[in-house]
Structure formats: structure tokens, C-alpha cells
Length: 69
Image (tube, rainbow, N blue to C red):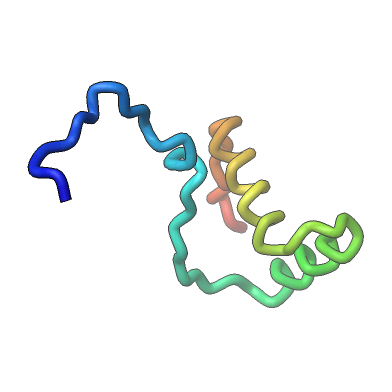
């Protein structure tokens, strides 16, 4: 190994923004079934569809309706 490395022309990791964090969440059976059916129709994995939906909510700053009756 070199005693010293030159990082003056280094660039940031282009994949850093696309990293995903594995999490464990509990979803109701109907929600999972909905996204699994949608996955069959679209050919996109259901976990990716859930992520796309949540990312869209973030982008549009949507908030859940917490006015349960």
C-alpha cells in the first residue's frame, strides 16, 4: 500500500442516492394482497411498488387521513 493517496480528483459515489435501507414493517393482509396483485399486472416486484408509492407520497408531501370514524 502507498503511504499516501491523492483524492484531489475523486468524485462522490453516484450510487449513494439510490441506496435502500432494509426495514421490517407490519402491513395488513389486504394491503400486501393489493400490491402483490398489482405486481402481477405490472411485472414490477410488489416491494418495489410499495417503495414507489411511498416515494410518490414523499414527493407530493401527502399525509395520511388520521380522522378515523
